[in-house]
Image (cartoon, rainbow, N blue to C red; front, top):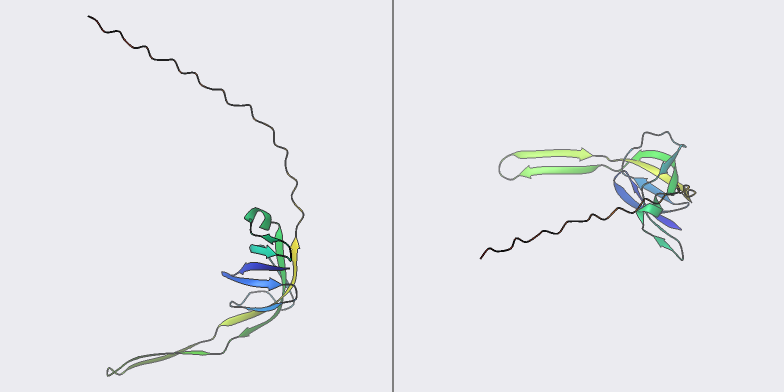
Length: 134
């Protein structure tokens, strides 16, 4: 069984036991668990679920393994013959997650709906046509 989950603006394909690097540093201590409820799709061997009403009952829980930073990416800007050069760098914060489970919550009790009375049909008076005088 796998699911497609949106985590901080990006979609990831996850299954139980997977580890993945998320592109943002999550302000949760290492060892704590997170629950993601923004599930986009769930698939099993026999069934594929894409209906948002059915997906509302699915949750994905993940454990924070570590926080780290990616390798530095160097950005160089230069304009030739003008003496303009800029060198800059960026290191992205990353969080490593381990997917613990993909669970489905029990369906909420459906409230009984009472039938509303059928709306009455409006009767419209027919217009009388005036007779022509001779």
